[in-house]
Picture (cartoon, rainbow, N blue to C red):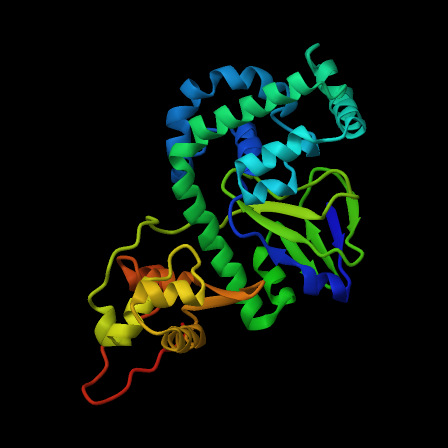
Length: 340
């Protein structure tokens, strides 16, 4: 079991990543190469992995065994900003860290001879590794990346809704059963027994389509990160327009709800829905109060995401997906949104 120890400062600094991390997904997909799970989010990846990935796999698979430890330098935090940012950070990994992490890997697995030049930080070997990661990512994960992103964003909306409604502790309670919040400790089902003390650094939670279970960085000195399996969606990811939303919510509010793709800021939301900035902010607040939208401040902007209930209103079979029955309002009366 992994026990993550929080302080009050850690709860304030705990956050959910902006979406799926490309290098984490790349590395964790290598764990899943021989896993024949029927997960539809991975179907496109399975169709392309055997072709485009064969060359890079010869270099990548020795670094990422089927089970157990893999080096932390393969998943730098900079990759949250994109593949190229992550690869630049990978190529800047200090030699001492390369050698230390490859020593741990070599103590548990037989490594090919070329890893000695990688441990020495030879630039040519680091560039070759970066090329293999890039080729594998774009060739095998690229075709399915939109669906992977939608699933991660859907999970993120669920966590942000809990965070908005009840704070970090409420959000941490949404991760069961493999992650249980027992204040002040998050108990995580894990193959090794260890303790991670955050000591005011907070925790970054990263949803993943490829994680079989929660995965943490091995080095406790690195920024605390916990990657977890993104919650599966219950229906097809693709939303469809709903003419029925206009009578329920009003034409403008329905337009605002339907414009909530890709976590827009209030300014972007106003532009998409064709309303003023103040109107977009007002409608987002009403939708948030009804549990359809979650909002979170990032730097100087506020971003808005659909909650699972809001997503359900934009899909077919709404009553079955969300577990909510919605009746048409009577003429002359205002409709009040209610919970399940």
